[in-house]
Amino acid sequence: MSSATLTRRKSQLTRNQLPKWGHWAVAAGSLVIGAAISALVGFGPVSLIIWSAIVFVIAATAVTGIVEGGRKASNRFWTFLIYGAFIVALLPLVSVLWTVLQNGIPGLLDPGFLNKSMNGVTGVQDNAVKDGGPVLGGAYHAIIGTLLITFWATVISAPIGLLTAIYLVEYSKGGPLSRAITFFVDVMTGIPSIVAGLFAVALFAMIFGPGTKTGFIASVALTVLMIPVVVRSTEEMLKIVPNELREASYALGVRKWRTITKVVIPTAISGIASGVTLAIARVIGETAPILVTAGFATAINFNAFAGWMSSLPTFIYTQFITPTSPTYIEPSLQRGWGAALVLIIMVMLLNLIARIIAKIFAPKTGR
Image (cartoon, rainbow, N blue to C red; front, side, top):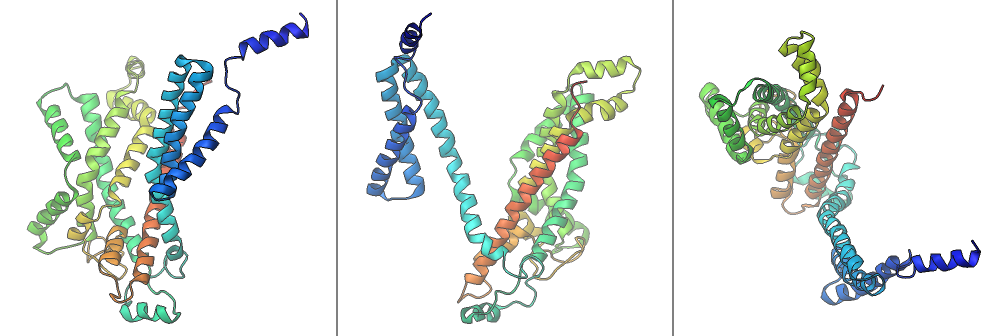
């Protein structure tokens, strides 16, 4: 076959197709038009992206319809619309991360922020920053409090949630008890966090007297919020374990409890770890239940069973609502944004740890 014939056939196949650079050219033009529209209504990064995306979807669909026909234009329209919706959905997340990074990095890099507490820091020290003095005080006590409160909440809620899910999936037969447990787990999923805090306060008030506030009471309050998340996530992970694995274990004469511990749980451990991490991330930023159960402290407290204890959410709240110096709030804002960045980093590390655990304990595939 001659080269002329090959060229002619190739041109016939690609005659009604946009070139590879076509949509990029449309995107560049949409960016220019979006910038113009955004300038008219109030220029900003978010406005620019949204208007450019709208113009691109309309223009790219029109160009595709003219060149390739209505059927491909309809396909491209829905494809671009999905991409655009994804980008718009990411805008709030990117905006939050950018704002926290922009405002939190100066506080995080401030000397002493990560190894000093607010004990002894008053408005006098914050007012001295106007004259070039350093920003004193830090979030060390709040970081310690967050770690201790979350640790004890996890120690309590993870075993209870795991055992409850095992009962619902492996032992219950759909009777009244399992239906009651499922109902109360659903109710606990939507319970307001402040109600969990009031429950813990009332419970320990009957034991130790009214007004008792400790980090462990805050852990109990967070446990009420964590348990339903752990139960639901673990239950779903156990359900997707193939029954063939259980039947093969039973056929070898292995007892049920040993099948669960050696076959079922190791198979679902990656999802269970992700569920526990999700539960921790769900409660690590709670403010209201910790305020009513652990109070707020400016000094370091390593004992979760005695004395008031601060946490990163309550530290951020007090720094923004009641600045150390009412006349010069910039140091308090810097500390608050720095603590917010630390909280985000902790959540990201938790997700990373969950992924590592899931990868290590996930069932090995292949030969």
